[in-house]
Amino acid sequence: MAIAGNTQHLHVKSFFAATVKDALARAHRELGPDALLLQAREAPPEARHLGACEVVLGLARETGTRPPKSVVGDPAVASQHGAIEDALVQLNAFMRTLPAPARDGGIEEALREAGIVPEMARQIAQAVRQRATRGPVVQMARPGGVCWAATASEIAAEIASRLEVRSGIGRVTALVGPPGAGKTTTLVKLAVLEGLRAGRSTRLISADTQRIGGAEQLRAFAAILGVSFLAVESAAALGQAIEAAPSCDLVLIDTPGYGPVLQSELGGDLADFLSRRQDIDTHLVLTASTQHSVLRKLVDLHRIYRPSKLLFTRLDEVESLASVYCEAVQQQMPLSYFGLGQLIPEDLEAASKERVAESLVRQLPEDLQAVA
Figure 1 (cartoon, rainbow, N blue to C red):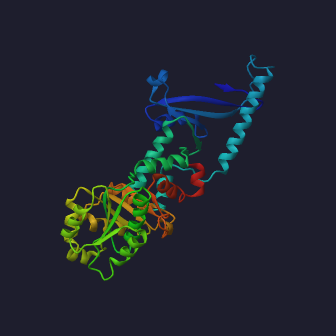
Figure 2 (figure 1 turned 45 degrees about the vertical axis):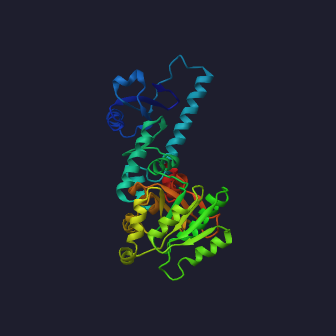
Figure 3 (figure 1 turned 60 degrees about the horizontal axis):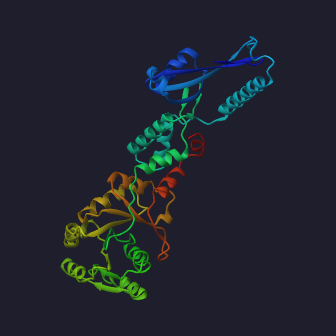
């Protein structure tokens, strides 16, 4: 259709094809590179036979032709035409001020710079593009390239969709992980949140007796909380302690942290015990400030314990949770809890997809968030 004005009119036309790309190619062949992409969406049912995708483009043309007689002298129609032309002028002016558009590689590159591994960044960017071109969202184009519109919330939604969270703990729960990850402090936080505040009788067990003073910190916490405490010397003793606990008691097990060498020398019996006990909910505790390459090695080192969940501490020390996200998605392991500091129990919260996704979106350039 054509909308008349004093000096120019906007020629608007729909093009159909199997893909948005093919439809755009047809449109630009007919209308030229100056055509403005107004909309891209699935073709409506009545036009599906023309192609699965519909794109609507507009082209402003200078003309001396007078408006059709049917609209001449109609103030309402003239006002509407004037408003459309004003909007078109403003839109074109706005387009000239935009930064480089978020083309196919824009979001992918930004995600990689935010710390997402390349293959995952590529997959997310492709999925976001499909989200953006699937719905009836306004699209914008410049000569020489198409900018597919996506909002920051759509990027966050795609990031979150790949992540699994599963908070809560089993009646018998063990924390494993490298030294210094915060296992003991986290265990005490869980004792308060999932035990005392829930009115459950709670028992703390330390299997960290080979390290000098390894069990003393947990013993002191148990005394402060007024809960039962037991230190065990072996995996067999740990099994006996679990069986001796009343069936209604919450049993939380602290374990020693070993490096690669000591893990093979000292951690074998405990790892074998935990890996065979399907009734024990084992969480692998790691720090969010650890680089992704190191996280991968730590996960591989502790795989012999057969942990079912990842629990990350020290989120207060990082701005981006890219390493946390990549490791959880690549390992296909759910996140259980996040440690945010040293306060007990305030600085422990159930893991959430929203926190992870928002931390990653915040790393995107401001101009990309504006366009994307």
